[in-house]
Figure: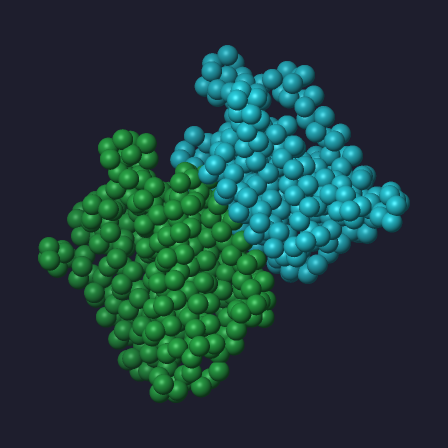
Amino acid sequence: MAMLRRPFFWIIAAVIVAFAVAPRVGNDIELRESLLLAAVYITLASNINMILGYAGYVNFGSIVFFGLGGYFSVWLMSAHGWPLAAALVAGAISVSALALVFGLGILRLRGVYFALSTIGVNEAVMAFVANFGPWGGSTGIYLSPELFKPLGGPAQALWVIYYVLVALMGASLYLSYAVKRSKFGLGLLAIGQNEDAATMLGVPAPRYKAIVYSLSAFLPAIAGGLYFFKSAYIQPPDAFDLNLSTETIVVAMLGGQGTVAGPALGAFLYEELRGWLLTSETFSHFQLVVAGVLLLTIVLFAPGGLMGLLYRLWPRLRSFLE
Amino acid sequence: MLGLLASVLDGLLIGAVYGLASMGITLIWGVMDVVNLTHGAMIVAGMFGVYLLAGAAGVPAYATLPIVLVGGFLVGVALYWIAVHRVIGQPPLMSLLATFSVNLVLVGLGTAAWGTDLFNVPVSLPGFSLGRYTFPGTHLMAAALTGMIALALYFFLYRTRLGKAVRAVSGNREAAGLVGIPTSRVLALAFGLGVALASVAGMLIATMFPFTVLSGEAYQLKSFVVTVLGGLGNPTGALVAGLALGLLEGLTTPFIPVSWTLVIEFVLFVVVLISVPGGLPTLLRRRRSA
C-alpha cells in the first residue's frame, strides 16, 4: 500500500477520528447534530466532485441518488420489514444500478446536453415518485418508532446513525482520493481537460463517465437511507430537495472542484456558515440567495475555490494536501 | 373524437407559447453558446410582472405585454454584463454555473417575497365555441400574440442591420469582430432579447394557468425539450417544435394523468438527443434526401 506512506492518507484519518471523538467529549448533542450535517454535506460534495471536478461534467440532479437511496431503504424497512443494514446496502446497490442504466443512456450526451438532462432526471424522478403508489405518492412513507428498538432505543440509535454517517464521510474521502490516484481517475481528468483528445488517446469516455456516474451514486444513496431513517419519514419534496442539490454544487465549488480536500473543506465551512445564518430569522429566508451569490462570486472571480487560493498562497501545500 | 380534436387544437394553442419561450433559449444558445439557466426564473418574472401590474396597478392584462417585454430586455442586458460576460468563451461548466447561480438568487428572492403560494391573473375574454367545446379566449389570444412576436423577431433578425449583426456574431464571433461589429454589445443585445422572450412567454402563460414562484422549473424543462427538438439556435425550429410539444400534450392529456407529462417529456428529450441530435430539421432533411 503505497498510499499508507502518503501524508494525505493520515490527514483524512485524523479528520475522521476528530469527527468521531469531538461530540463524545462532554456528550455534546448540539455539536453532534451540526457535525452530522457536515458529514452528509462532505459525503455528497466528495461524490459529486468526482463528476464535477474530475470529469468536468455538471450533475444538477445528484440529489436524486440521495433521495432514491432514502426511498428504497425506507420502503424496504417499512413495507418488507428488512433490517436497517440490509435495507441500506440493498437501496444503495439498486440506486447505483439504476444510475448505471441512466448513465449509459444520458452519458452518451456531452457537455451542456448532459447537464440539461440531469436537470430532467431530477424533475422526472420527482414526478415519478410523487405518482408512485407503493411509495405513498405525495404523502410519502412514515416509519414506526419500533424500528429504532434493535439499535437500543432512539437516543442510542442517533449515535449509531452518526457514526455510520462519519464512516460514510471517510469512505467518500478515501474513494475520491483512490479514484484520483488511479488510472481510471487519470482518464476522468483527461476527459475533463479535453474529451476529444482523451478519446483519441484511448480513454473509453462514455464507459468511464457511466461508471463514475454510478460510483458517485453509491455512498450518497446510503447516506440518504440513514438520513431519512433518522427523520423517520420521507416525502418527495424532502427527498429531492432543490436546496440540498444546489448546495452540494456550491460546496464543491467553494472548496475547490477537482481536489480531494476541497469539497470537504467547503462543506465544513458552508455548514458552519449556514448554522450561523439560520439562527438569524431574516437570513434563514435568504439561504438560496446567499448560496447563489457565493457561487456566482466563485465562478466569476475564483474558479479554483478555496484550495485554489491556498495553493497560490503556499505552493508547497500541493505536496501533501491533494 | 371531437373531444380529442378539441384537446389537440388547444394543445397547439398552448404549444405556440412554449415555442415563444424556447425561442428565447435557442437565440441565446445559438448566438453565444450559453445555456441560460435563468430562463425559468425569467418566465416566472414575466408571470409576476403581469400579476403585479394587472392586480395592483390595474393595467389591463394584455396592455402589460410591452412593459414586460421592455423590462425583460433591460433585465437581460443587465444580467449579461453582471454574470455572463466574464464566462463567454470559457468551458460550458462555467457559464452553466454562472447562470445557475443567478437563478438561485432570483428563486430565493421570489420565495422570500411570495412563498410558494398559487397565484393567478383573472382575465375575462370570450371563448370560441366549436360544438360542445369552447376554446378559452386567453389561449387564442396567447397564440395570436405569439404569432405576432415571432413575426416581429423574424423581421428583426432578417430585415434589419442590427439583426444581421446578431446573425453575424452567431455565425462567427471573431470574424464579426474583425469587420467592426461590437461583438460584446451584440451579445448583450441577444441575451436581452432572449430574456425578453422568456418573460413575455411567462406573462402569456400567467393569463392561462395558475402559477407559483417555482413554476419556472417545469416550463424551463419544457423549453429545453422544445429547443433540442427544434434544433439548437434555430428560432423557427423552436416555434414548430413548440407546436409539436403542444400537440403531444393535447394528444396525451385525455389518456394519461397530467402529473406524468413531465416524465414523458423528459424521456422524449433524452431520446431526441441520443437518436437525432439535430432535432426535427435534420429529420426532415434526412427524409428529403432519402
